[in-house]
Length: 634
Ligand code: PRX
Image 1 (cartoon, rainbow, N blue to C red):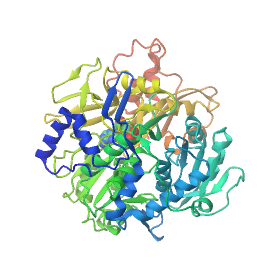
Image 2 (cartoon, protein in one colour; image 1 turned 90 degrees about the vertical axis):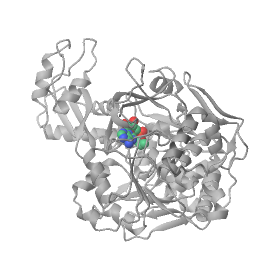
Image 3 (cartoon, helix red, strand yellow; image 1 turned 45 degrees about the vertical axis):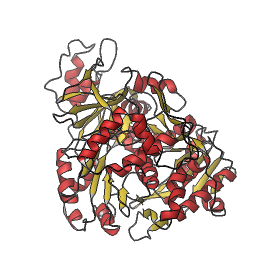
Image 4 (cartoon, rainbow, N blue to C red; image 1 turned 30 degrees about the horizontal axis):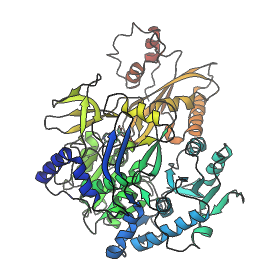
């Protein structure tokens, strides 16, 4: 197992060593894993291209590290606890031995269905054990998984399937979320009908039962094919730099991009960070409430915890079903020791009242975590007092799909915590603040653009099928730096506070959305001429989506129009991207070169119109007043 830091002095000295001798530091961590063949070189890098290789020449299979290597010492320990949507249904548990067998069977099934090393397999599934099993089965045989969050629409799913030319889609028949039963297979059918010609098989897991349309030519039942396989499957030797998975995420321009993570470095970093950030100890029960459709689920439900030999909970349902006490009921029921969730969930549950949290015994908790968006002070204190009872350090973890693992965070009971501060860099992570000209801001008590100046093992390697895009998005803004897209502040003691995105990405309930993506969707409405989307402060979601829309023909019923626009967005992207507010405008403030002045629109949406700055240089300064007048309050 990689090093687990246990004191402040140790953190400080390990951090210094990791910066002074990064290769020696990461080699020492990597030594603690099972490699089929040791690497030739620890690190080669060039941020200009970018070209980053960790442990090249090394051969491994991440599933041997997540499963096989634990069999002897903890084969009978629970690896996954699955908590169903309905608390009255039966919990499922998989020991490492059972999970190993289940993964091998699924891996053999994939092979029978013609999946080979390097093929891409798309997942569109609820949080059922078969999702984790399927993902690991891909890794077992060297297939590349691309998990798409099951809240995305058929159009969005089709885009992702096509971009990665997936050979297979694995889905469920229906999903359960609270009291709702959501059709899933039919969404996949719709996506396939949109021209996903690369898909040869749709493998369907029967989750609820119920009528679905069946196409004998491509549809296969999971149980028919997986259940009859043998529970052994050799682990494909993977180069450390072979692709492990693709995960789509939104940027400020164009369609979502497929962030590519590779096998060796990702394994080392997610395991190392999991052990340290959560201070996981043998026998602990760890729960991350994320969905495996996002990076948090990949790194900190599946790979990090399992590789560290931890017991990890997978929860199928939602925080408010059957009531707003569900998270705390699960913590109590499974005696959860480390709990990791998002500020949106904390704010939503806080708003429901303390009685839900007070009703349960949370004395098992040792560490509580937050991820995905800035946590506001009020939510931080509520989490600290009501959930952590002031005895559980809050780890406010900052990271991204692209970083693969947690980058900046307190270490519980080792470094201090401060509300709203993600605090200190992890060992091996070298964050810097730059000004907009690319000069490094070296002093403390300063604000700047958050960049990283040295590679770390789990960083993205490329964006699938478009390396230029990776270069332009992350490595072109500032020479020799990875640019995160976030602004940050460093306090007098060197702690980092993440302020938020400085690009046209918004963070709605911890879901990352490109404003251009939402605008493109809105523009699909036949009566929309042009639109501009910005984020605005939202009490529960962190940011809400505010859309300014110019229409072609006068709208007779604005309510109907707004519903139609939301429906178009739901169809194009998914319900998570539906605008909260849609304002009809006669024009949008633009620069003389025709660029929409989002800065002004953001201020109007936030009702911060006192200091709009100089608008006289705009192409159409008069429009500003009319947009302000029409601002939607509620
Ligand atoms: O703006 C930052 C915000 O979420 C973005 C990354 O989103 P995504 O790739 O979807 O990954 C989310 C889960 C790792 C970042 O650029 N963000 C993430 N964590 C924090 C955060 N903002 C403030 N505080 C955090 N702890």
